Picture 1: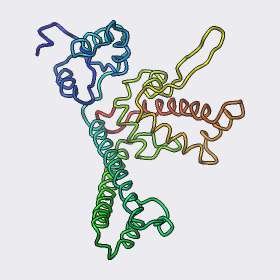
Picture 2: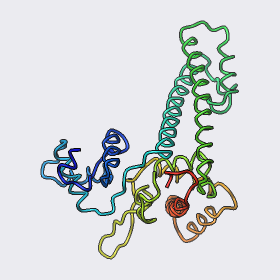
Picture 3: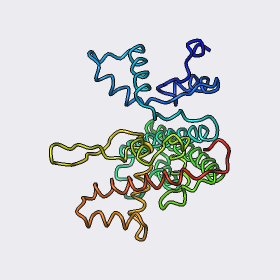
Length: 302
């Protein structure tokens, strides 16, 4: 391999989860140490260059410099069950997004065909019973718009079936992993799958603080002079951040959970609702990190 000819013992790579995945896997299998450089770090470094130019050569140099500067960069996600789960979770998310687009189009069609249909069909159009009801509303209508709407309704039904089938596979995979994430209030199998899929191997993040920075729940300092304050961190893995947000909102909605009590405590100390939610998300991030350190029964999960 070319890396061996260069006497390389460590390789920094950006995009090891998508286009760079084959190269990362080949390098790891050859015995080299491979670390992942987040695209955000490369973009930030690029802004510091004189011209801000983006080329493969410039990015390669910046990635190498970042690798030399930071000793605690995480390794790429491992091959095996975690990668399989990441693919399943990603495909399910794509199907959900496709279903949302199809439902929006059905809604637009029904507004034209049956104005005020919402008074006869309550609830989301993804519900099977509601799909049956709106199909009945179109009975006897042979217009082109009605034909298209009926086809879209059938497409939503098909997507519902595919999403449910994938969800069953994902739940089974999470159960077989024996992860303790589901012991956390608000973390069901699907949320646990999102977390496992995006975290990869737990040892990628050595501390709670590094995990919080990676998922965007660690606030960024924005102090000036004697004024000490922090601002919202909009970086990190946003899908992972969304999963943590879902857990936080679920805990707050339940009357007798640790998260609800902590949220109310933060409000009592003067935090706004948004600030209290952010604080709770960081607390949940720390709890998730702790649970991720628990070994699972499936090889290659840790």
